Every structure is written in structure tokens, then in C-alpha cells.
Image 1 (cartoon, rainbow, N blue to C red):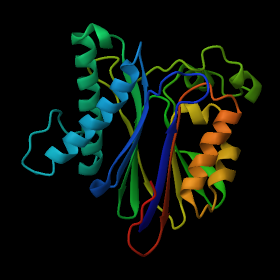
Image 2: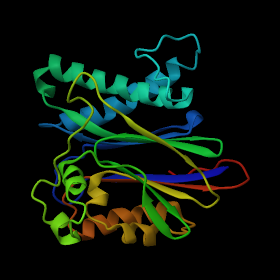
Image 3: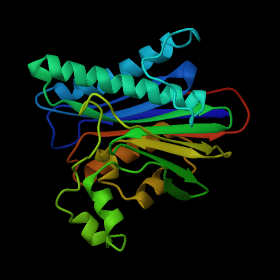
Length: 261
């Protein structure tokens, strides 16, 4: 499977600093986007801490005899357990830092991570940062937001688009790294098809650009850097009220792996 990717983060038009963070562990084919929260600059501390903790865990567990900080879930594969455990460790590190240092009190972050393994991919997330798949011109959200709006939509499935847009607490998330000493991580496995494009993003993109807009900007794009720039620009044109991060990943059959930036 040939992989191409590009990513960019932008402060947006309303914020003074960027609390989003994206990262990748190239030899593991693991891609991550985190959206930090908290007073002062602690959100950006939390989002980077999450990515660093996961990277450290993956490096340490290259040794198959390494001890894991959490028990394996027998319902999950080794690959799924490793990803979930890395995110749980990141959660604990953030919670611990926030508990011990008054500067970081209340900090937390969302996380969405995509891991490629052969013809399969694994998506794990906590919070409302999203993973989309664009396949044959159609978009599908592979993650479910951990938010009050999503819970309300479950209770009221006939909610109109206008009601969703005007929902008063739509930015309130119900799950994030650092909120408690333990966290539930959602994970799913998907088959990869030739030509699949995946978008990892913070809600600074998904809250500003509709699904059809994302589809149009990434479908069949030969230049992934241009596609990422277009996504950021579209979010800013719609108001740019939050930090914006987009990571676009394209999978095609055959050939060696190639990179964007």
C-alpha cells in the first residue's frame, strides 16, 4: 500500500495561540491529531504531551518483553490493545501533571489516532477530533464525537440541521484526555481500499466546513499539500473561530511509501 500524507495546523482568526498538535510515528504508520484545552497555554502542553506519551510508549514496546501499564483487553487484538494502552497512558500523564502543577489545572486534550497495518487501519479517539474517510467521492465519519450534541442527537434522532447548528452547548465535550485518571478509548478497525483518503482534524475544521466541502476539497487530489491548505483556508473563510488542524492521508495500491509534509 502506497501512502502519501500532508498536514498543517493554523491558529485561526480568533485565537491568540495554537493549542492543536499533530504528530506521526513514521515507522509505525501512526498519525495523530490532538486539540488541547485549558487556561493560559496549558492546552498546547496537553496536546503535545499526549502525542509524546504515545510515541514514548510505542518506542518502549518495540521490545516485546516490555511491561505495559494496563492489562490487555481480550476482546481486542494486540494492535488494538497497543494503541488503546498508549492513549490511556497519555491520559494518565496529563491528569497527573494537571493534578500536581497549579499552572496546568484543568488542562486536557482530545485525540484522534489512525494506525495503518497492511490492508487494515485502526482508528482510536477520545473527544471530538474526527477521522473521515473519503471513498469514491463519498465521505463517512469514522469517529463518533464524545459531546453533548452527539448525546442529544442520540436522544432525538430526528433533530434538524438547523437545530444542530443552533444547539447551545455544541462545543461541550463529554470525554477528553486528562479529565480523570482513567479514560475509555473508542477504537474501530476498517479495511482499506485502493484510493481511500482519510482526514484527521480538530473541530476547528469540522465545525467550520461541512462534510460535502471536505469531500470536494480532498477528492482525487493529486497535491495533498494544496488540499490541506484549501481545508484550512475554507475554515478561516467560514469564521476561523478556533485553531484548525488537518491531516490528509491517501492510500493507493503498489509502490513505495511517499510523504507529504
